[in-house]
Image 1 (cartoon, rainbow, N blue to C red):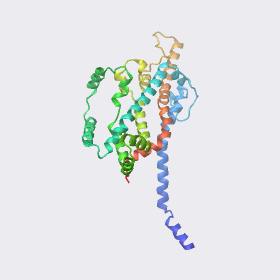
Image 2: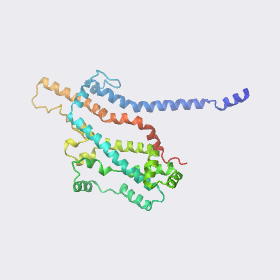
Image 3: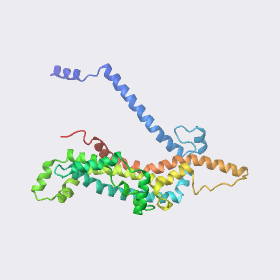
Image 4: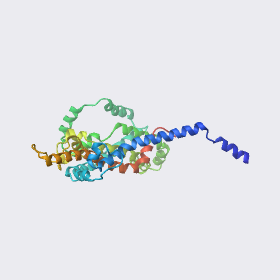
Length: 311
């Protein structure tokens, strides 16, 4: 018995090479984590540090001269709150429409008895390689009367072929055909089977698609830049773009020429604060997504692995 235990211990004993390899892997992982977290920590520290510490380069990791003045200026801008409201509406409504379109289409294309599914897939693949271009898109939005409306932010991106393919692969590799046949034998029609059986079993892919589409809507600013002129309909990302690129804040009026010394100092202070506010708006725009992601992380990882294994 003792000899057997010693033999087992010898089988799992680490060699010197194994220990060196493990140490190198730990060092590599720590290095990757460090270079990944450092920009995030630096941005957070810069957003709450005194501007002159940031601009002079003295602040390199931890905050120095903590101040919330930058966040106060950002959050006192009414246009940012309007952008938040619009982005939340665009994200929730757009994601709901995305799921209503993507999930049924992907399920239909996953069923082998669906007539013409190869033709439909070919028809859906064509726009991935051949696009109409920006000018035809603008003319189309004008013809539909969607310019300066919320629909221009939602309907053009109602689905995505990439997400349809991922969802179809999930249905093909995860939902057993025998379960569908048993449901049909029990008297379920296609709609009842889809609602009562398929959807409850598809919560992982629904969560993954909601994350994909939700992040896309949250970060969408190009459509608003092209099609929306009404500032009351601007999404958050377009508002932040104005702040970052043009530094156009309602709390920072234009300064007149012919300033005295105190005005010059005020001008310098505002310029420093504008630099710090850049980091604050990064946090304001990404914090909601960062807060949501941990709750969907396990589904996200599973979505990445969809189709890699079958059986």
